[in-house]
Image (cartoon, rainbow, N blue to C red):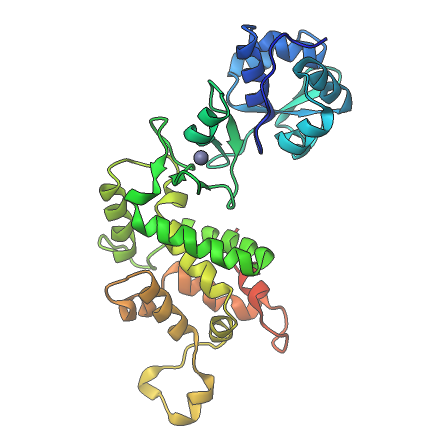
Length: 329
Ligand SMILES: [Zn+2]
């Protein structure tokens, strides 16, 4: 049975968002729509915990019912909506069967994997409610309208134009991705882990310059992002991604430090080394004293020092994958 009004599914939209929009379009209670799709009325856990914290994995029968009520072909829904990414696993403690395994719910993983779609793109499609989309590193911005989508604390996305550092990093990431999507994707995930776990060093401190860079950025954007580890650090994440994608800097990362005080021309073949790597990273970040950054035993140099171990064997060729594997999880 078709509902009287249809609404188009949007690329990467969460299934929960689509069901909610379909309900709104038809002036129906969203739990009623869900019960039509799940085919039972036991929705108590979802009612109790609220709608927005869930997404829904649909088994084939539930997916067919969604296609029937929405008026969109199953293929289209499968191509656009999130349910194909969600595993239907009755064993998972985060899934609760609500229809004899016809439909399960899953709490979305924080912190930055869902955001409202670009307001201008939504308006252009005639949507009255902005769909919630699954975010990933390739979907953080709307390039057509220049919006950063990952952070919109007051419902308004950041305008890239007002954040030149972020805009430059977005462009840099796109160029890298065009050259080698797989390497760039994995390097980005590793770089994000490294910066999200950033520690200045072993000693207590109050004045770390890297953290001051992030604080200053937060002030100049005059809003506090919901996902600071991603948005505020994005320029550093891309700077490090860039270096992990560079064969020259990967080679440097494989060479342990040489004490510059005992430096001798015969060691020249061992340069560039890990210290050169850190100096360069500091420079690319706009660190006012990259030599200071490279000398401190921060979590970034701790990551570099595990690279030999991560390669498994001393003689094994160290490549970008070694750097990615060595990133903290
Ligand atoms: Zn847009």
